[in-house]
Figure (cartoon, one colour):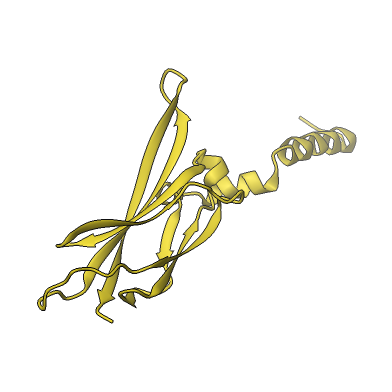
Length: 152
């Protein structure tokens, strides 16, 4: 079967138009968004901090639109053997929820002499998605980050 140059050019133009109909960013986002990135990623700027001192946490969500995960609230809890303490609750999520930075202060724990400083920062997002019957359902996702809190 022979194709003329005009028909082949027309087919290529149609295919190119079809492919370019989807935004390049959406195609790239789907290709790079693995399941592990679906909820975003929290990172600590430093993993050791003295009690009463500030430390910084960053949240990056490269796949938010594709995964339909848009945080309504951030919650940070720190703890270890001595129980957990809420240290920050952020209800006003930045408009660009894909990247957020938070400064918080390491709490003044009651610690005994045997305390080695090893704690866990539990970083949590709250988001809504349609449930199986279409109504909104609130979901929680958390990530545990090791943080060493030493006495000042």
